[in-house]
Amino acid sequence: MDGDWTRGNARVDSSDRRGWLVGHFIEPSSIRHSDDVEVKWALHPRGETRSDWFTREVRTTLHPFISGRFRVQLPDEDVTLTEQGDYVMWGPGVDHNYEALEDSVVLAVRWPSLELG
Image (tube, rainbow, N blue to C red; front, side, top):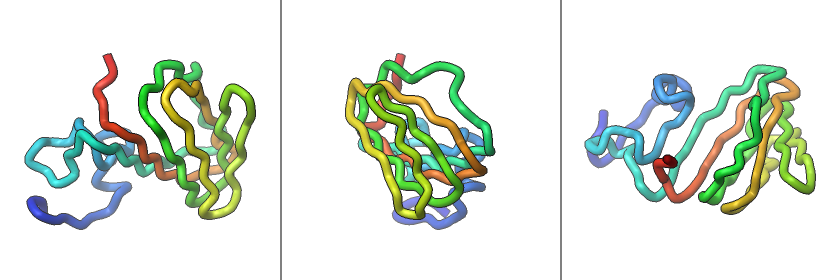
């Protein structure tokens, strides 16, 4: 269902977009389309990491932790998320990377929703 409201399963509904559930990249006719915010249901298997640091960040990002054990690498510190509800947040210009220390579920919320060139 879509229109004024919707319901579903974040894992299923975002599977064709690498976990992204809300953002500018969702069809404009969907209530999940937004130019203001992006939301990702992120499933990270143990050992997963990015090959390169993300260095072009122009958004603010919030990562609330759901389960597992997950490390976010920032320029000045590594933050390990271990307890449900732990989070890390950073603003534009902050380089970052990550590593799943165990199979992990992390929610990613970033704003605004921008197409990066």
